[in-house]
Image 1 (cartoon, rainbow, N blue to C red):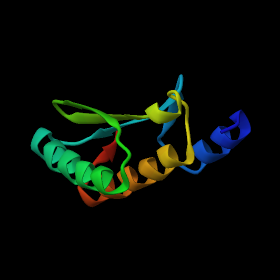
Image 2 (image 1 turned 90 degrees about the vertical axis):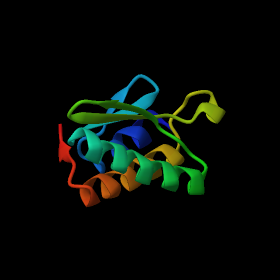
Image 3 (image 1 turned 45 degrees about the vertical axis):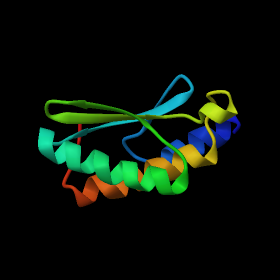
Length: 97
């Protein structure tokens, strides 16, 4: 993706930000709710064949997404997964962090 494409796609995903060759977002959620949310995300990731790096901490979950198969570059698949994660997070009552 070109830089303008990345900027435009990020603008459609409030709360996500770019960190190098990844997009990241942190959600506030209680620990056990975070575990349930991660399992839900993992099920979707398995189905679509694309995975985020996930960091679970007390009170929040952080997702980082890049396409490793594309040389750690951002692709459409990353933004699609980010939108899916947003929907899952909302369903689990996660809050923007």
